[in-house]
Image 1 (cartoon, rainbow, N blue to C red):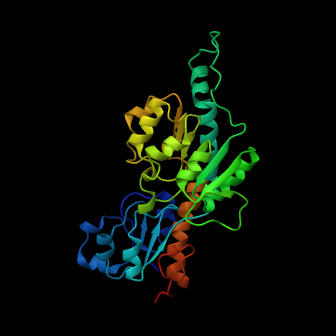
Image 2 (image 1 turned 30 degrees about the vertical axis):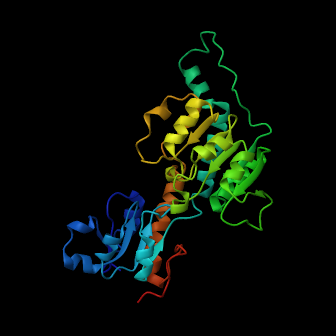
Image 3 (image 1 turned 180 degrees about the horizontal axis):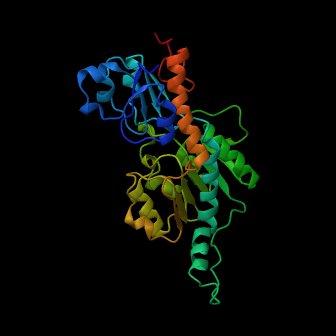
Length: 317
């Protein structure tokens, strides 16, 4: 398959390159820098991040876009679908890692464990000081999951082990779970103590967690976000933390990554991570392997392993 050109625009996990190199002719460049002949020869793309309609339209013979990550909002899927181009992502292989991180954020935020470790490392315990009692506890808390897909289900299963009552809000109720369904995000926020966001980036989720939702969550409430920073109105969140409208927040994602609002860094009741929910060597290797396997399978057997639902999967020619 070395006669098949695969474009790798920008940075991607090195394991993707290692798996594809030697099998295909790799073109490691931005679309805008390539001549017409090179563009015409590209039949596959391996990408981490954005791949807009203009880039898709520049490649007349493109068949597959393999995206690194479970979220694929950076790829213009509607344009790909219109051209019968398959888009794949990397679901399932990161579910456990992200779910573990979500639960860790819940515990860290409620019990302020990172602050306690910083207190110890600063030598304050050794000097005879006592770390303050955490204002909150997990005991008796109710969790509302905003989103209950594959990762949301893994989070829910872990939270059950912590003896927490679980509810959820999605567009439609699920018949295969025992958790309480809320017909609106506002209704759920008013009933729970922990609001955990794990929804994808869509027009409907843009700043869905706003001042009204935070107000409903209330002064004992905690916001956890491991989905997309896009879903939270950060100005409203900062105001809610400053005023005591909510008790705390744990965030792994932000609206304008990697920029984190300076105000968030100053809150003792906030736990912040640099978008590391899936960032372990085994999980990132598995994600990279799935990117490579989608491309290899497409050009060897005419099927991608994990096509996204919006794109077709005809047999490649």
